[in-house]
Length: 127
Image (tube, rainbow, N blue to C red; front, side, top):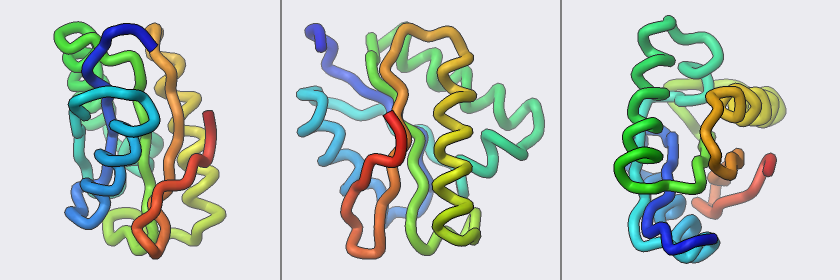
């Protein structure tokens, strides 16, 4: 990774998942800051949301990429999500599809899918 001080997380608005994702990304990518783009059930929004909702997420990622030099974008799902209450295997499928969708945005970034489990630990679903 270069001298970038930022990474980006498309994360759930659920306050329980903010800190684990923040700490994990800081450690894994040696960055100081994580731009958090939050939605209730972000994977569902990316895959099933309106064009306007998806464009809103994409434009915020673009700001992080262009203004902050973010080189990593993570899409996050988590245990017990009220905004996207689906079984874990379905959520993992959504995370994988979301990673592919973000890769198609044409940004020169590493894109990965993360899951925060019932112990509030981060697991990598897709790199």
